[in-house]
Amino acid sequence: MSDVQVPNFVVAGAGRSGTTGLVEGLRTHPGVFVTQPKEPHYFALHGRPAVFKGPGDDATINRVAVTDRARYLDLYPTRHHFLALGDGSVSTLYYADRAVEELRRVNPQMRVVVILREPIERAYSSYLYMRARGFEPCDNVLDALADEQRRRGDNWHHLWHYQAMSHYAAGLAALQAGLGREQVGVWFHDDLDSDYGGTVSSVLRFLGLPLDPAEAVGVPRVNVSGTPRLAAVQRAIVAATRNEAVRKAVKQTTSFRFRERIRRSSLRRSTVPAEVREYLAGTFDADLAALSSLVTVTTPAWLRHGEARRT
Image (cartoon, rainbow, N blue to C red; front, side, top):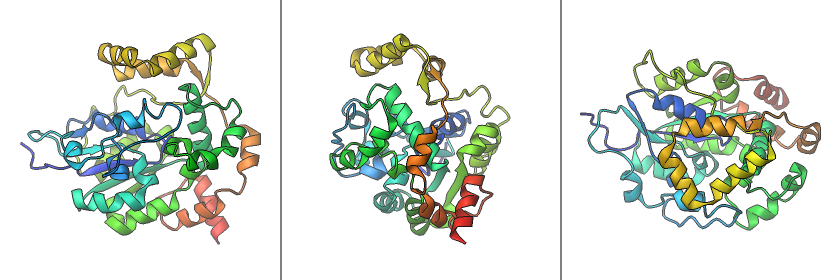
């Protein structure tokens, strides 16, 4: 039996940067346990109710969030053979100032996995994701971006914060300061996209797990975003998402990977429109410059450009 009795890692974000795909890869390792739900949002929201007001927030984050410590720890097995236990809440990075003290209280040796994506691509992917789920009311992404400040003021939850969630430096700095740089690992969506197995293996090594030859085999691309191929199919998916009885029945009778294959096949991959890049031009320059000083691993081109702006 393992002597690990509390979680010892979190996949902290950023949202829409490949965290779900990474978590599914980690799950293939026999020594890894990840909570159900994958995102209990405990470290971001601990000690207060989840009462977000955006469209669909009652059916999603307000329903699944676990904000009581005892209930959160009950998500983990007490008798087990796992070497690494954790969750995959992307709110942990976004609310790092609030999360870091609780991370320390639960486990001072907590390891934090951060995966980052080019910020404009991340923001646009988040918009497409919310649109595909039937929650995003704006059919024009520029209108949604312009409405962000009002939404934040009206307490729509973090995935609606398209621009704000693409600022990474402050959250990463808080985690590094609170836990130590050696306990905070940084990877990039670019690497996950180009070398999925290698990236999963790198994270497993960071978590101190022996590599398994079967790791990440057969793990599909999951939680992708895009534009609908067929409106009728997308309407059916949205209707099922919003109907509690249907959603429970589907989850009980199908696997996560099967549902992801259906959802993925209904979407067409989409690149960031030129007008979105123009609208957000310069928005993230200062953050990327700050971020580049916090990351010591090999960085993708979009972050090296941030280093050039800093110097």
